[in-house]
Amino acid sequence: MNAITMQLKEKMKKDFEELTKVTIVDGIAGKEIDSLYSYIYNNYALESIKQHLDYKILMSDIIGKNVVSKRFADKVISLFSKYQRDQLGLIIDCTNLLYYDPYFAGEIYSNQKEHNNTAFEPEPA
Image (cartoon, rainbow, N blue to C red; front, side, top):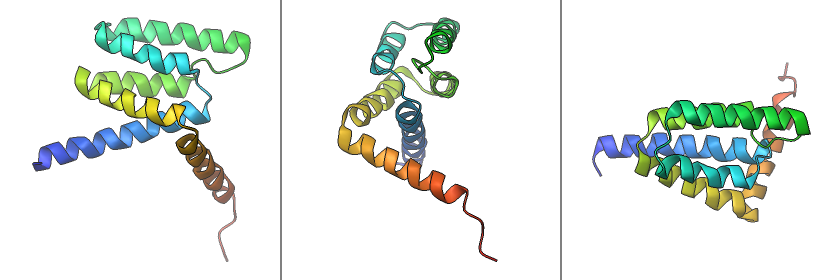
């Protein structure tokens, strides 16, 4: 691989990890991850995606559970603004794999809990 490809791969890896963490930690409905494929493969306009996500955020507010969180919506919009269709598909496939695999999901929860516990510890004097 050349340097540009490696650089793109690293960016995709970082974005995939962020999307997966937001998806699991915010408790996003699995159906919403699956619906990202329709955005990609039906060539939805970015404005249509934003409207759909805003609608789902409103639903979340009404039912009191994260169908879609603001963080998730922001991450999805940034990915759709940044990547081409095939690259988006790869990121969503990777997110899907980790979302539905309890081993990986547990690892993300564990890392997040560990991070949250250390984030509020006072620094040594």
